[in-house]
Length: 68
Image 1 (cartoon, rainbow, N blue to C red):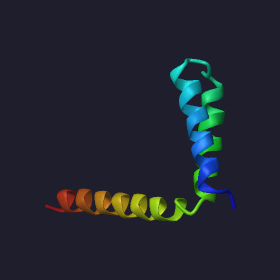
Image 2: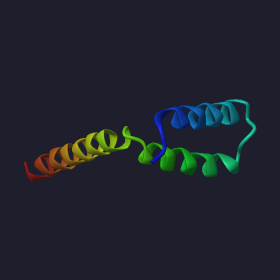
Image 3: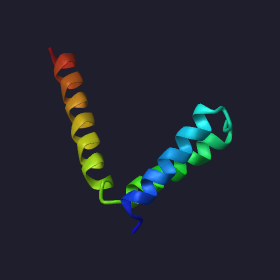
């Protein structure tokens, strides 16, 4: 399991590379690396639960609007 400080380092590296226009095609790789790092930390599970709940609520809202 990767630790939260490692996630912060990868996040800063990603921000510097994208902000400084150092990464174009490589930004996709950095994004994947950032996502894998986040998923490996203890922060990943609550974020995934929140995204799942939000997307479920969005689909339910669209379904109820279409049903009217």
